[in-house]
Structures are given as C-alpha cells and as structure tokens.
Image (cartoon, rainbow, N blue to C red; front, side, top):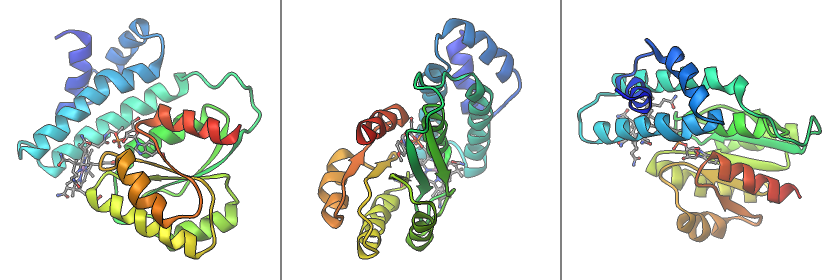
Length: 216
Ligand code: B1M
C-alpha cells in the first residue's frame, strides 16, 4: 500500500505495529506534522466512523482505533511547530468534553494546538458537568471556555451548559466544536441561551484562529 493508505489502515485496523516507522517516513513527505493528522489519519478515522455506523465494527474495535490515533498524535505532538510569538502566554483557555460524552481525541488535539501556540490550557477532561465547569472557571479565571462533544445529545448538552453558565453570571466567550455540531446550531440554539459570544470551530486549526481573533 502507498504510505497514506498505510497510515489510514493503522487507524482503521486499530494497530500500532509499524505505525511509528511509517510516521517517520511521513514526516519526510509532509512539511507539517499536523497535516499528517488532518490528512491520512483523519481519513482513517472517518472510515472507522463509517464502518461503525454500518455495524461492521464494534465498540471494542473503535476503541483500538482510538488508541492507535492517540499513539500517532502523541508521537507527532513534540514535533509540531510552536507559534512564532515566543513564550508569551496569549491567554488562558479552559477545555472540556461535555457531560455524558467520552470522546476526547478532538479535544486533545485542540489542547495540543492551543498549547503549542502560546495558550495556557486547563483541560478538565471528559464528561464534565456544568457544575464542575463553573467551579473550574471560578478557580482558574480563564479568558475563553472551550467545549467539545461528538454525540448528538452533546450538542443539546451544550445548550444546557450555556444556560447554566448564564445562570452563574458567566459571559466569557465559548468556543464549541465536535462532529454533531454545526454553525447553524451554534448560532440559533446555543447562542440564544447565552449572554456572551459563542463561536463554532469546524476543526482544531479553526479553533486556534478564532481564539487568536478573540485575544487580539
Ligand atoms: Co464514538 N461515536 N461512541 N467512540 N466515535 C461517534 C462520534 C459516532 C459518530 C460514530 C458513528 O456512529 N458513526 C457516533 C455518534 C452518533 C451520534 O450521536 N450521532 C458514536 C457513538 C454512537 C458512540 C457510542 C454511543 C457507542 C456505544 O457505546 N454504543 C459511545 C459513546 C460513549 C459516550 O460518549 N458516552 C462511543 C464510544 C467511542 C469510543 C470510546 C469507542 C471512541 C472514543 C475514544 C476517545 O475519544 N477516547 C469512539 C470513536 C473513536 C468514535 C469515532 C469513530 C471517531 C471520533 C474521533 O476521535 N475522531 C466517531 C465517528 C467519527 O467522528 N467519524 C464516533 C477524530 C477526532 C480528531 O475528530 O473529535 O470530530 P473530532 O474532532 C475534530 C472536530 O470535530 C473539531 O476538531 C477536530 C479536528 O481538528 N473539534 C473541535 C472537536 N472538538 C472541538 C473543540 C473545539 C474546536 C474544535 O473547541 C473547543
């Protein structure tokens, strides 16, 4: 198989055997490690999603795929370019996958990209309830709140989270992302329940661009 297809294959098969040597090869072809993630590795993940949807994969197999993806990201992370702004901290972002949702690969990617570009990121992890989020905001005093969620019910959970933040008199900008969300849902459903800005990011790089714009 050509290199790109092999890289996607590791994710689809959920195997790490041969993954690192092939990532090393890929680093010679791609100028930026992030392009390897956004390209062949994400292609593999999209195929995993499709196969899972068609009942051709079970959860245990998807978990193996997630492990392979995490191993690839962990290998590439130290090689990613950090922002040109040097070591000045540009702002603090609190990150969480919303209540009821365990998907964290996208969130972790956002963490890596923001951290590598001068942001201080406080990652609260997965299944974060609005109460836990509000407590952490009070404790950490961030500039921006980042919420991730991949399930359809997580999009609804973001609406609830926005309502709870508003009730707690928090109006910091919120950045939202994840497969089940859209810009339209963000603008019509989440924003409507919140005092502050709510911005939809289609991927982690978009998340960085929006965060940079907010912190200007
Ligand atoms: Co799950 N899962 N899963 N799963 N899983 C999906 C999301 C699903 C679409 C698969 C499918 O059916 N086709 C489906 C959701 C259906 C729905 O609600 N419409 C689904 C399901 C049903 C489930 C379970 C319910 C399965 C079950 O138990 N029967 C269960 C849910 C458990 C729970 O959350 N309570 C479940 C479990 C799992 C695993 C644990 C096995 C594993 C997750 C492991 C982990 O994350 N640690 C898993 C996986 C791997 C997936 C798929 C295959 C891949 C997700 C992924 O990691 N993608 C997924 C199908 C798919 O998306 N194709 C699927 C790679 C990642 C980099 O992309 O997270 O989208 P993503 O992040 C992107 C953007 O969305 C964006 O940036 C990233 C790219 O740069 N982004 C942000 C994300 N968050 C952001 C935040 C930002 C900015 C951008 O700012 C704050």
